[in-house]
Image (tube, rainbow, N blue to C red; front, side, top):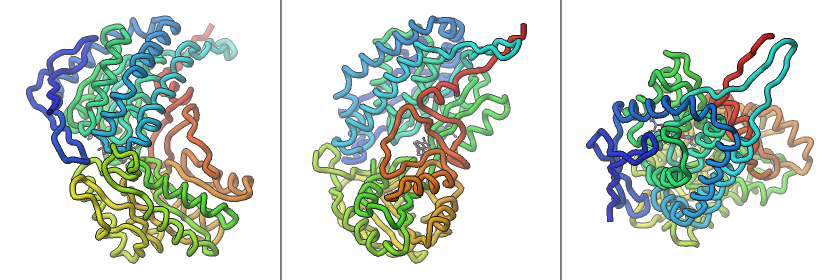
Length: 472
Ligand code: NAD
């Protein structure tokens, strides 16, 4: 049955969209149409921003404990919907069930719980000489999010913005709007004051661009591709609006010769293939010292070949489909280009068997990739790992930094100090050593063309605060 949504969430209620246009939502595993949602227009965005603007003074002045209580009720309402949200994410994104519950639902709930705490303890005024330095809500936030971890990316913006005292207009990805509807059902139940949180669905070029360019939006918080991020920056520049950008990556997993190689390769392949490789922080380049290169290539091929591809609802599945036929075709072209440029196919590839239906690409490993080649430079956003040999630590750092991106990365070594030395020289916002766990309170964001600003913890809160000095 096709779920036909005609409503948007504006000024505290579900209202019929001004537009009659409907956008299709597909299940990438069955390729079936599962829902339609409004293709919001600039008129819908105007209504939403006006509601947020009207709510600004009240929400900014609301006591921190009251804001924290609203976020706590949201946490409770979302927790009660865990199963439905998990099911919906698996259906509209294609993330295998066995990881969706933890990564797609558990993680955003953890992030929200963190901001319940932070909302209750706002930054204290500071005295600097004769000045009183205050942190104040930055204004109305326009949040634009992608499809790969939809609830997580919405939460990374909504929770800190609301905790800081800023009303929000959210424009989720048109490919995965159904989780946003569940989030807003929970928001409605949590009882935020009208206009504090608003939802406009629609395409990027229409609703997204209208939001980013809106004169009454003070902060644009965007997660998505570097190309669209650049465009958002231009739109915001006209009015000097603040912009936070979480963009693409081409992260390097550096395996030093003294590393526990089987673990480094197994975790590295798993990271590159997580969510079918549709992860901005994916370690899509594996850099291995020549002494252990052949061993690493064999192991990576073995691990990737062991990934079971198929129906994401099947608990045995480890690799689901890609989000769309367009994305699948794009990934296939990257693989063909990687092979044409001299890469050596060691797992998967264009002729590997696939399920009959669904937008799948087989888990693919390509060795001997030149550091300047297309496959080492471009973000693939699919289940494709490039392996590159390196001569020593110095060369590993040079190859890791040979990228216009600077999001994440990893270093593996038996000697933690050596790993830290290498990690410090890698020009990215995040580096994990020997499989260090994701920390939802640590700053998340990129150097170079991977973004501007940081999400999560107090660093994420800072993006939604202005600083004022009062001299006495
Ligand atoms: P995308 O840039 O195509 O779309 C992201 C969002 O921007 C969507 O809501 C889309 O509707 C909107 N958009 C598109 N064109 C727009 C325009 N002209 N004006 C305003 N908004 C517009 O990205 P995607 O395909 O949804 O996501 C994949 C990309 O996101 C990858 O490059 C990935 O690396 C990146 N990403 C980055 C992070 C991070 O935190 N760094 C996290 C997830 C994804």
